[in-house]
Image (cartoon, rainbow over all chains, first blue to last red; front, top):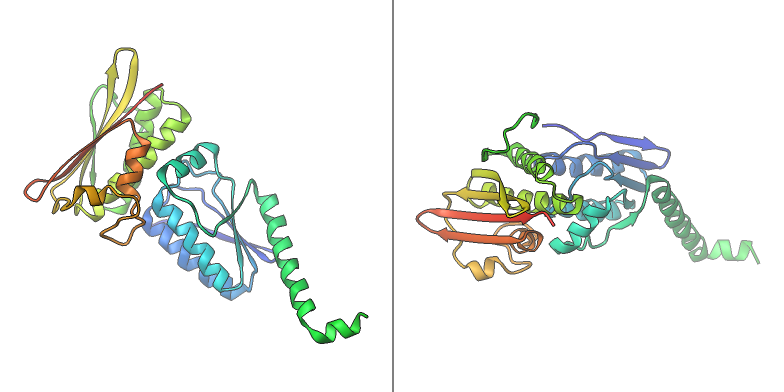
Amino acid sequence: MERVPILKIGDILLVSIQLDMSDQTAVQLQEDLAERIVATGCHGVIIDITALDIVDSFVGRMLSTIASISKVLDAETVVVGMRPAVAITLVELGLSLNGIRTALNVERGMELIAAAHADELDYQLDDDPDAETATP
Amino acid sequence: MTAGIDLGQPQAQSVRSDEDVVRVRQLVRAVAVASKLSLVDQTKVVTAASELARNTLVYGGGGSVEVTVVENGRRKGVQIVFADSGPGIADLDLAMTDGYTSGGGLGLGLSGSRRLVDEFQIETSVETGTRITVTKWSR
């Protein structure tokens, strides 16, 4: 069985799917990613599907599951690079990709993750009563 | 890989494993390209083939897929037959409903793939298993 490589870039895990995945490879990716999120403490996952000709219901479900798993592990998932024909087909198939954030390319995906993480930090600061008194 | 296939003949692929589902996708894509389907239509028919080949494997216990170039006047198309000798589909209307699944899937395989093709025909029985024929025509 082939495996999809996971790259760490700063605080982000980047997965660029370059092969026509068998279902088993897709499930393996799910498990590998969960382990890497915990091992690295990364707050963002970018899944680049530029090279994918199709996204069927199995891969669609895998993307949703990865998004849910990473959320539980305090990481944001963004799916980037979906081809127009793939988007049209997904909608007609009836797949809504619930809970998945998307961006047009890796760069925008990274911006999205950085923004989400910054918001979270702000929120934590606002929540902290000591931080309030320190900045009158 | 798929280069050099004779598209005048039906192309057969057995479906016994995950990897075979990948092979079905690649075969259908090659035939869809040769039939001059648009990129969106290629994507739709390959996606439908992926769903149905997975059904053949998971629910039918494996089977076979046959891909043929068909012609209707000046239009070309891709016809795919998925056959298994599994347990058949007990309630076809229910199985064709969006979101219904007897397994662990999303319940979009049958209903969704019917929307992605132009013609969709299904024969199923307990004795002979399930046979699904789909056709996608070039525009």
